[in-house]
Image 1 (cartoon, rainbow, N blue to C red):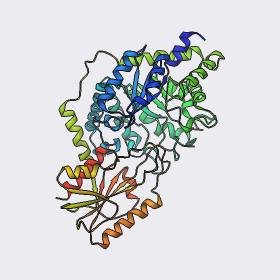
Image 2: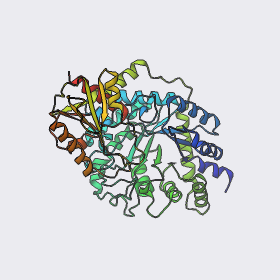
Image 3: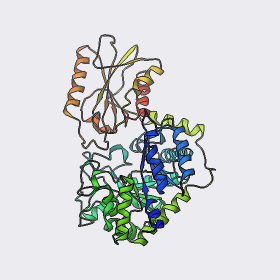
Image 4: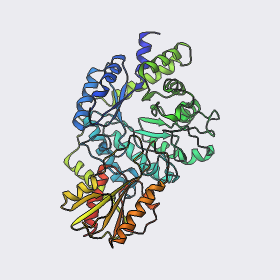
Length: 493
């Protein structure tokens, strides 16, 4: 194994740098130093504060032997990952406005904020169709359920993002809209006929490719109709090479989803999954597990002929091409005051009121938090955004566990429930439903009106089938919590 071959393989690995509130990036310092020493081709950034991310990105690029790909999942604005940046509503909430220019503007704002932090690859947009309510992952992340309508929206997002010098990523090829299990937890298979998949599910990806999308992320899902081996798409030569490369003529970067997820394990570890993903045609690998173990497995595969040396060199060239594309002099447009002001208002614009109107909120407002997502690993635990926004506006809002005699006004029940990785279900828990009904019953017994706030995909709060004023806030992100708080006060005037 030559030193050059080892360096080539290392460039195809993108480990995760995770920020924690207590330690910042310090817990990953050893990983960062080791990754740079072996010459990885980039990193996936998860969490952090805007200024700290900017400083880290600059440090990483300066210390690296090559220009790096610095990726982040920013489907809902740069604020989805990075404190201090602008958080945005989910794609479904924006598209529900029926304004494609708003979608373009959201993509531009996200890219400009990412770019100023040194993040040059946004792992968005979701091109999966929202086809099944029982799908545990898609929901409001999708641009819709009609392939013909979604296609131009995907293309608009891709073009707006890349016009700002940030790579976009169409995911999860060939589409996970028909999955009924979560590949973060299980091996998943979709048994839809090939003609149906090609006619509908692939349509948004064709639009992304037509728009020049820089990258496509493979799904950790098997499609027996497309590949009889029943391998997940990430590991399938039939799907990567024949379908994506040959039939759809995609020539840019193919990325495997996190190699540490259960959907690609099924009898193999992360290192083996990485070998098979590269062999199938993926170019770069996110979260490749232990770097030394995976790099050793790749070297062995190259030595014994499992990996084709020319195949590896193609991936190295593609990675370098795109890393160079996103690293010209810093003369890109920074987000203006108008950009960020518009982004701040967007969350308020997408709110929806059902079974309204919302009664007047005056004096003390009691808010009960019901969290259907509290057992989900990695969830954002901040649940104070509603009351913080109401207090800022002058309302005496309080988080309570049940209605009390301190207030005679409307009683607000804030339901946090959404489609989330690792949740693995599309229905409310029985105890969640029971808690909401009990709280509503207690409020009614005190002759108080009840208002629901749905902090997640609208289908979750609709499962309660309660005909009370309901604020649809689309997600549990802090930006949407705050918008819901303002909406309660605004609607009740």
